[in-house]
Image 1 (spheres, one colour):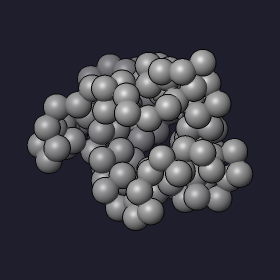
Image 2 (cartoon, helix red, strand yellow):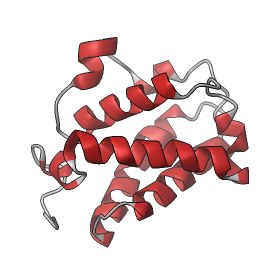
Image 3 (cartoon, rainbow, N blue to C red):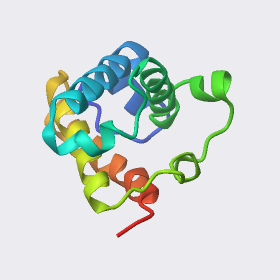
Length: 133
């Protein structure tokens, strides 16, 4: 761990712990979303049963970090903004999502610089989902 070439080939995927590491990150992310008062609004945008949401985010992040395209294999192509366009997502919702992810990242055995890198990179699609002020 501690590879500084994040974003190159599958370096980010490797640093994240490959599929199992990303699945743990996603599970922690949704567990945190269930618990945090700040994330109540975005939690309500999800189905009660998070099994499919967990699977979709895990698979998406595998490809997004340079690993296998597991999302496409199971669910087909995705446009993150389009997939979320039916939801009302403003700065509050974006920030709540990123707060959950920041807390989930901090629960992993990831170096500090990798946590910062991931959060900075994830802020881009999070912002692209915003369709309200």
